[in-house]
Image: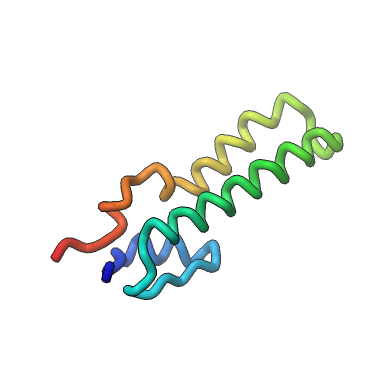
Length: 82
């Protein structure tokens, strides 16, 4: 069982992810990563469709990375220590 830190739960909530103590952190991270990859592909497709200029792409990717900053944290920092 994993007791998630409050700050982690707050960040996950913005993505619609509400893990219980029984939900393995690895599974939650995988789900969050899938959402991130989906948004990256969507952003790439929007750029290709001409929705915004190419020179804005890197900045938009950077903002997306900041939105998913939880993925840069090691899993052990997601849970409270016993």
